[in-house]
Length: 310
Image (cartoon, rainbow, N blue to C red; front, side):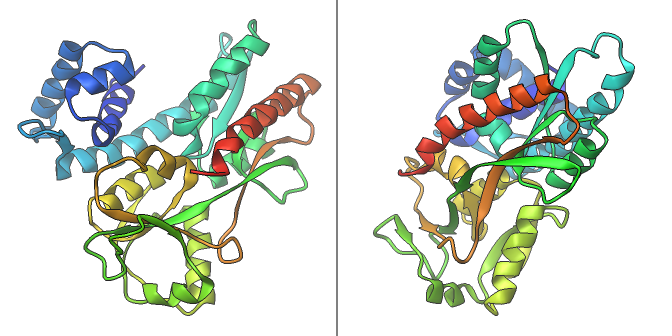
């Protein structure tokens, strides 16, 4: 694990933890080691990353910024590993599996663990990729298997797994916030209420954000985008912290349902916004790769049961 991966893993656990000890338990690292990593990183960057004087601990604005920037660095490192893998004698036997955000965070580890049980003698290179990069890498077979957005591409075979439930995260300081109930289903006519709402967007290269933009445009809704981030995990946490409304996925929302923060989780009707999750390979992929892709699809179908209710 690189230093960037280590710091990213620690900081992304802060919003879900009360103490540094909680992070240690979740990441299987010692509390002194985590404190050392945080301290050395704060000295390196010259900023405070975590508010530790008050419980629960929380990220500083610099901490949130570091997470966003580290995600770019890690994605670049992953892309470099993928580019070099075909040239490396040691990596020629690796099956290169890419997950779209946020699935790499929510289910990537569990699925990889189960894959090792099915294929104990196979080595796996697991990375995170955006949809546009994944499509290009699948075409050239620089990525073997991709779990995420489905593609309509003659060079790629995409197998449908399940449809994600999508939600607006509405903070307490929004005019749309309701004290009770915390979660509810939005009607199609209610979308107009978001007109003029402060909104946290994903960056312009995000396929998911393009879908959201089309939803607003098709329904003549104009939101005020003051913040852009590169993944739904960061956007969701910022919305919960009161920085604006955003769209999130069930795999991201389900881990935040028990937070004491005051915010609404508003489910978006499927006729307004749909996101189908699938597993994709190049049409000329080897039978072995296609077999592993089918196994990943079956494992993800099992994961999809938690998408049914909350």
